[in-house]
Image (cartoon, rainbow, N blue to C red):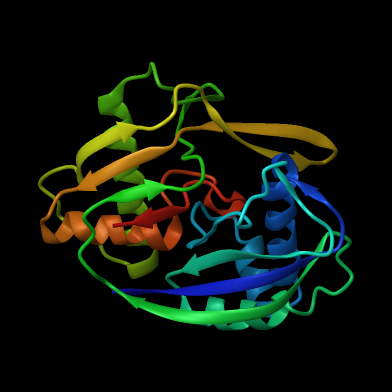
Length: 235
């Protein structure tokens, strides 16, 4: 197993508030995908998993604003190397975007390695039905189950085979926030808010658990990954 990563350098044309940054990045990536026929087909597919994920701009300023005239970086990952290679080109062609321009991309190939800990750098979104999202006072066992199930489905949808697991991939989960963390989006002129949480996860050491943890790094943990949800770091 391996995943592919783009380290992108972005020149900021106009101030971008932290609250708007996920929406701004997501729309930039979506527009860039639409400039390539194969990527456009992928983006238009009515499928649950798109097998990519991105982190927010960094570093973040104290004022919670990414400032005009400065350069920031963001990271984009995928299990699909062709997707990364094509997107690397089209990201730099989006010159008319009023908010920022990707001026440089650097590709890295990451082979599977042993993961001791996962840290969610962006909110992990987990829906629990009826338009609601899992919160800190929710059923922790249900959270474990849904996170594991989601990763299994991502693995199967990309590799075309099921993993025969005997246990949940999570050995230990620590909630790092007291209050919900949010990702804000705009769609058809309406403001949308996804509620999530920040987690520290210790995966189990068996082969299947480590594969699922690696998929979490590659595609994101939980849901709404193409909006920036569940982008993870590791130890």
